[in-house]
Structure formats: structure tokens, C-alpha cells
Length: 80
Image (cartoon, rainbow, N blue to C red; front, side, top):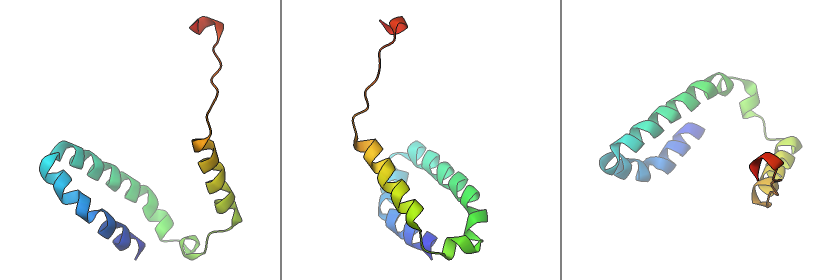
């Protein structure tokens, strides 16, 4: 059910990409297949049917906060 929903979401973008930028489409199609191969064992377990718990929510917001926060990079002596 979830995979069908995701496929329907990308369908409008897939055909123009396939026609206009075939190389990019092939690369993305290959990456999609690799991801699905890795997810396939998880999709067959009961844990995929359970609702997300608090750890997911905290992790999501922590990553989002990290992504949108300016990261200070230190300059070492070798880079000067």
C-alpha cells in the first residue's frame, strides 16, 4: 500500500525525466531498486505495521534542527 502511494507520487516526474534526461532517469531507477532491495526484508516484518514511537519524532526533529543550524568549521593550521 505504501509503495503504491509513493510510486503514484513520482509518476508525473518520471516520464518527462525518462524522455528528456535518460541517463539521469536510469541512475535514479537503479538507486530506487537498490533502496527497495534493502527495505524488502523490513517490509515483511511486523515492525513496519506499528506506529512510530517517540524516538522517531525526537530523532526527526534533532536531524531537522541540525540540518538548518549553521555549522561552524574550525580552521586548522594545516589549512591556512
